Amino acid sequence: MKSKNQSIDDLILEHYGLKGSVTRLNSYIDLNFLVDTGKTKCVLKLNTLQTSSEEFLTAQNKILAYLKEKGLTLQVPELQPLQSGEDMKKISWHGNDYFMRLFSYIPGEFFHLTNPDNKFQGLGFSLGKLDKALLSFRSPAIESRYLRWDLNHALDARDYLNEIEDAHNRSIVEYFYSNSKLKSFHSLRSSGKA
Image 1 (cartoon, rainbow, N blue to C red):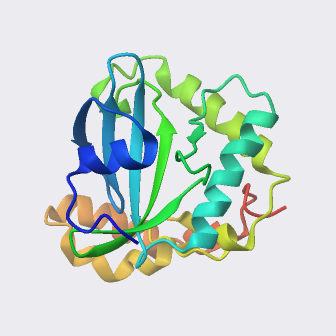
Image 2: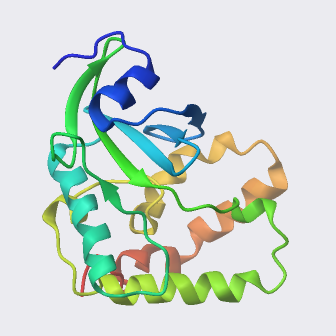
């Protein structure tokens, strides 16, 4: 595991043979960078070993390949192999260990920054197609992953009600927590279970 204090540009050049401008993107768990070579754009993802296991990331890669095979009309990022031919590589960079992957870039806008008129139906249709395509996909690494914002774990967020500063908004959320229907989220059908 080399790469300890290389610049992100040098890391991309060494492992992918790409040179161009690199811009850090917003992200929640991973470090994401937009790589623009002038001819093509890609997204470099650095996943921390603390939040993503190799099995989980391999499963993510398999999902993307599976969706491509399904021939969906939705755009799905494509995994770009390293120069070595590997799908991902474990690296140590600036004192942290990561799994590094590169994906094709799909241009778009954040949904909340667009004019939502008539877009909710399209979003729902697209998510429905995606969910339907994934109904037959199985992965223990995906199914066992705990994500706080997964609706199956909605009750776990009750401990954070005091983080909602606005009393009116907090009372709305408290109403749904007191409603017994919230407890049945785990029984809803999803692409993670048949």
